[in-house]
Length: 84
Length: 502
Ligand code: SF4
Ligand code: SF4
Ligand code: SF4
Image (tube, rainbow over all chains, first blue to last red; front, side):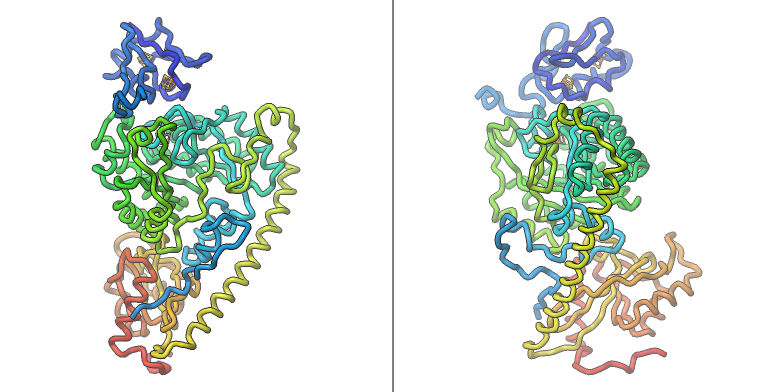
């Protein structure tokens, strides 16, 4: 049970201070989540904090590799425009 | 009867030197401001039209995170509120940022203002932002600090801000109506949740307004930025302007939306256009009293170094800075000398200009046929160019002269507030006497409210109390009152010595 940050992360630092499990750390080329520490915020918050503040669609995946913030979900940009 | 407002700039075509439209258009921008605000603004390059020719500011990028999303922002780049979209700043840790600031300040003594404006929202990165400010307050006390924010976490940080003596805050306020806000802000991060749409916008608006009020209450200068988005908030910004000025923001700066598909923003990709120059100008005219619109803003980059519009950032990359050896206490002496020389020049220019204004008004009197006599009026204001102070709370009155030639700002007169705060005004007698003396020669005092007690003594002294123009722009209210007096036959060209009290 852990989330994952992938390469579309823009290193904005928003998630790191929010993590109740101190699972997020600065790394090159982008931030990472320590899968052993991540609790998906269970017991601390209703929503996983990193994925709740992350501004980049697709940057954080759940354990099945599915983005918590799929394309268009944060910016409201229509999918066909995103692709173009 | 239409009276011209003399104080307002006579449009002089800017010639050479400065880019058109940015200079010479708001001559007396600061004239109406209460003195304590004018002092603070005097040599701030972003706020004073004059000072931006002499002093420089820089920004450092220490605050990458943001707690909201704006539709004109692509978070792969810098915060679009304060910088050009599509620009990525070199992110600094606070220690590096401080080194950079010291290096620049020692090299460019004109650098007087340090701002943190991104790449995200400085107050969404409170540790990094305040660590930078704390170190700078200690190591470079001659540098002014300022910060820009979307306002969401502003109320939580006011105490911290006032601790470091940060006296300039810019809030980007694009709307005061959540329905408009829902078209600008798709979400905010609030109390551990992502809140979307109208609900999120409503919270953001409430926090911005609360933050503005708290800052004003603390005596911290507040500038408001708005991004003009045609079809979204263009009809709405005049109201935003009115409200923020009434609450005590001292400058309102309307910036055009910059929107291109290449920026990858919601607006860019959905074809939302930016305003034309004419639209921007029309709105600035509409929002202004005209005096506290900032028209020389060039939307500087978040990591820009140098005078507004001039960017010397490439001289100060981190590796070059590491190689520099800076003795800041020494540099501070040199800086103080340069600043003194510049201030002297600014001061002499100001005096020259004041005498010019006098001249203009005297000349303006001559050709008028239907002459009415000039009348002095006192204004109670907290700033913002509107009448927004209670008579009893005013520590200072702005004095204006209305005549057939127009309205002219005369000066400031200080007094002891008739009631020092509090809602009950009991023993204010002696303070009232002081105020009456200070207002001698005035025939009206315009304020947001006048209590029952001072009313009689004011009238007896020939000073008509007037609370009917609360929240109105100062000049408009004066023109209205002057016109009332004319209609009532009080303005015939004769000396009125009969009302004088001994
Ligand atoms: S889901 Fe929660 S615990 Fe896991 S990395 Fe994100 S913030 Fe930390
Ligand atoms: S909030 Fe998202 S983009 Fe920012 S550092 Fe964390 S994962 Fe990366
Ligand atoms: S506040 Fe600034 S960084 Fe945050 S979304 Fe808006 S423009 Fe971007």
